[in-house]
Length: 487
Ligand code: HEM
Image (cartoon, rainbow, N blue to C red):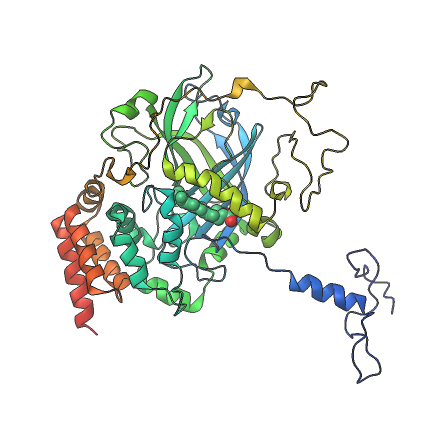
């Protein structure tokens, strides 16, 4: 029945749908007919609605925003995104938990992902970081093991304290990251109330071709706010989407969250002599040695109109850098340069760069062609050959990184033993950055989290904590004993 008041419901081919209530059958009680093509289309589409979730960081929230440059750092980098004070660049951010699946609760004790994409005039720059400045280990060969440690047990399909802590404690370099996750910062109250870190050492390259090593920081302007285990437990009971709700509502209400973008800059030659391995993701650079320099401020000011289109289909990759910003020899970063694009080719397809949230605002002049879901005209009639005699797109040698001297012997070097000073920084964090009360919170959070692991694993963790500070080991032991006694 035609209805003049509404626009027609259509098939994907644009033809009006006559009936969206009753399937086509042979008689009122008979079987369905294969010629009910509307039913076939609707059901077939539904059957394919789910795409793979991200292997890590599956649960997340995102929004669009604007970066404004507030300080001139052109002495360190030629990147045009930083070229003038006052310059504005559009951006998209996605925050996430790490271990939980796409339907997991938000208020869980876990690292938070902190990924930002800047649509610069020289292409997209993605800074795919976390809310902590360090990570569990130093070699990307261990990453799939971490995933298996924090995800579900193959038999019980439950999260397993033993799998998790057996893995962490056998990698003593993880103690710094574990200490942060078990601290009062381990459950941020919301995505708005946490700092972000690029975490790895990256490089900046200036117009003279000089290289500087750099760490990126996002400093929350909402202040740090965290939840205790008890508060989080109660919250999850009433609202599993607390982070999503908080971010979405605050942007919707015009209360735009803001972060200051800051950098720590190290002259290239300092890497040879700095007291900590400068490319070791389990360690930070002291702010006394390399103070924070303000670069800009960004705010999130627009929610996605459609969560799936923009947030779920967002693809961030540390490989997306722009002239003036580049990589470092950090092995973890090197491993990630491959893994993200590879995961996204699987999760979203080889042409995922064309999905609007991922599409650069800069022109794309590439000879890649074809592939599933190529929807941008495929460069039309342009032949895809290079070199060519027609002055079509050519490489721009002016953008090459300056040469980097590296060791010449290929081997499987034990990176874990290169500056195997695993315990100094967690010790500093424990002694100098935590109050008495925060230390007690750390002990008790650890006791609850490790509960269920074997005694051998518990002892290994206490041993590692003791290496950082005897009072850390002692505090964790007492908290575990108290928890066990209370049962
Ligand atoms: C997501 C791999 C370490 C932050 C992912 C994804 C993969 C991955 C495959 C899913 C990508 C997608 O489907 O779009 C790895 C590997 C690592 C590593 C192999 C180490 C060798 C790290 C580190 C950080 C980090 C050190 C932070 C400093 C993130 C974030 C996301 C993510 C924020 C979610 C991005 C988004 O919101 O879409 N990682 N990761 N990862 N990873 Fe990593």
